[in-house]
Length: 173
Image (tube, rainbow, N blue to C red; front, side):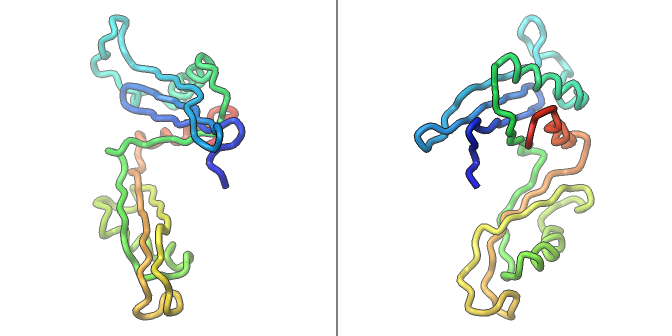
């Protein structure tokens, strides 16, 4: 499935002091910047407001700010890709014996405990197979070749509730 459709995709980065939105489209088979918008949390004099942080805004206030940015900039696409800041995430590449995807899904939480320093019930965990060595044996067989997996997690907390912001009217994430 192609990443970009006719109207392109939005990249939305919600940081602590700014919201950045880019609209990417396709031109001659290449990604191009079609539009962008940015909202910075600053006072009237252009100085950073002491103690102010976008993470302190409610989801409704944040959704309104994003909606206003989209309207003011003339951005048309509504297919969004959201970013989570790197300090709020953990990602690594691990190797495990190749199993079926169903068996890997059951095994990943046990393996993740070795790498994630907080209880798994406090994180959102995801993974993807990035490579499997050529199989000489059946999946899961003793001595089976390893699969390389990309594993990532983000803490479940008020700061990561921002993912719910993508529920803006006509916005898809």
